[in-house]
Figure 1 (tube, rainbow, N blue to C red):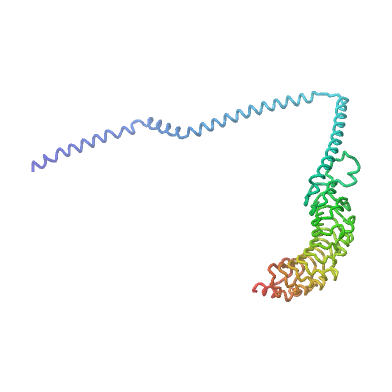
Figure 2 (cartoon, rainbow, N blue to C red):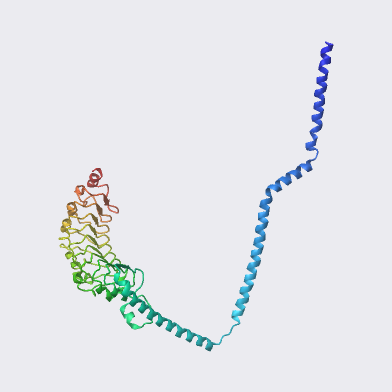
Length: 385
């Protein structure tokens, strides 16, 4: 027993010593709280130092900018004071203005001479080989302006006279008004495409003998002008043997242009957005090749039965017309029809085309803005086909 106690005593003594050592070392971490706070502050400042430096730099730049702005304002104030102190003699100013006016006049005359020389040289070299020309958006001066004075330096249509081989010409939005047409158009006998769209023309009757003058004309675009009278478009225009496309949309026509029934080779006819009230019965008698017909946006109340003779018609636009009492029976005969727009035509179940489902090629049908209480039965059959 005594040996056992003696053996255990050294271990107990060792453990006590270690405990005292640990207890003595713990106060080292807390006995100096000021040192701990200083260490934490230094660490925090080290983290925030880049941000503080950036802020300081920005503040410095702001102060510098304000100083520069103040200097500029002072300079501007000084310049304004100097300007107010100037008292020029009106006679001296008039003398300089007269010299400036003379120089401006001379510059215009020289420019006219140079432009004329360039036109003459160009007409002998490049212009006569041109096949197409688009000068849309460039306002042309009229023939009357051209003859008044050489000081009127405006774009001219005179170079057109040298373009005898021109095949297509676009004169959209070039300032043509009323009956004004460039005289040079009469010399372009090889034209196939002519666009006079987006002008203020009321007539193109100043150009006559269209079949002889333009035997190859295929496309005529008169869109967005002020044409109101059916006679404003020459009757013989529609006798051009190769005429295929006529666009007279967005004008003020109250009737179909006279002679249009003679355009037997038409592929496209656009009469939309006018004030047309009636389509004559013989208009479509010989339009066997017509593929697109746009009559939308007019005041048409009925369609002629002869529309059924447009055997090749693929696209028909009738929207925005008061077709309440029109039964549209002729539509069923248009076997090639793919697109049919009847929006806002006062359609109801009572006046809806009964055999519309017989149009086997129909893929686009617009019936919006009508008085349909439900989907008409023929439309359901078209959908299920």
